[in-house]
Structure formats: C-alpha cells, structure tokens
Image 1 (tube, rainbow, N blue to C red):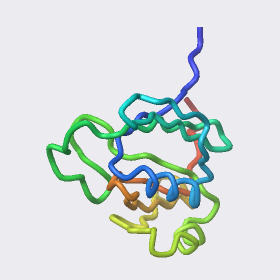
Image 2 (cartoon, rainbow, N blue to C red):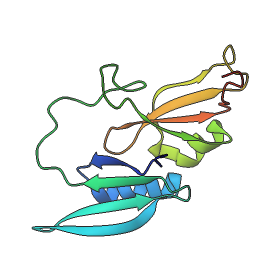
Image 3 (cartoon, rainbow, N blue to C red):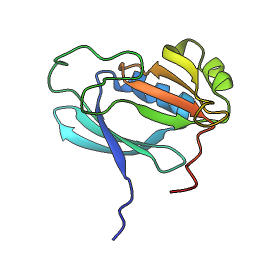
Image 4 (spheres, rainbow, N blue to C red):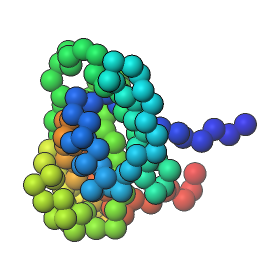
Length: 139
C-alpha cells in the first residue's frame, strides 16, 4: 500500500514570525489549531500543494547553534526545499527576508538550467530554493 507524505514537524520559538514568513513567501495558511493547554498550541500550516508544517512550541532551549550554508552535514534534516520558476525573481520578491547562506549555484554540468540558492527562515532553518531540476529519465 502506498503512503502519501503528510507533514514536516518543526518546533519554533517565534510562531508569528515563522507563520508570516511562510505565508508571504510560500503561500502557507493555517489549516488547524489544537490547544495543548497552558496557552500552548499546535499549529498546522498548509500550502496549495498540500504540503503541511506541523508547528510545536518549544519546551527547551536549542542545544547547539543552527547550521549555515546548505544545512548540517551530520545525520538528520539538512534543509527544506521549494521549487520555483525563477530563483532570482523569488529572492528579489522576498527582499530583506532572503538571508542567503549559500549560492546561487549553477549545476548545469548535471542538469542544464538547474540553479539553487539556500537561505534561512526566521528560525534559522535552511531553505533551498531551486529551479530547473528534472528527474533522471533512464531509471
């Protein structure tokens, strides 16, 4: 039986800033709010492609600093990626919110027209914005 990807769960310190960033730049909106008691809430954000973030409030401090560049190179979540038609236009439209950590880099030697840039969201999570990726046809 096939499974469908449902959500990516994140713990964030500043929910309003996180929610505003993803709503403005990637079309996310609230899909559900669940009370956890003591004024804490679990929030589901959803975009038009049925990609969800499940957002938890923090219960403890982060044990190590967030990574830079394209994300951590140790086992775990490296970055979140979004595909766009034009990276330059997307970054320009994001204005000061586009805090670039690496790139843009061109990968024309692998796929002609493939270009990627990495940036930070308000929580310090690394986001990849890519254009021109195509699946390999001979697999």
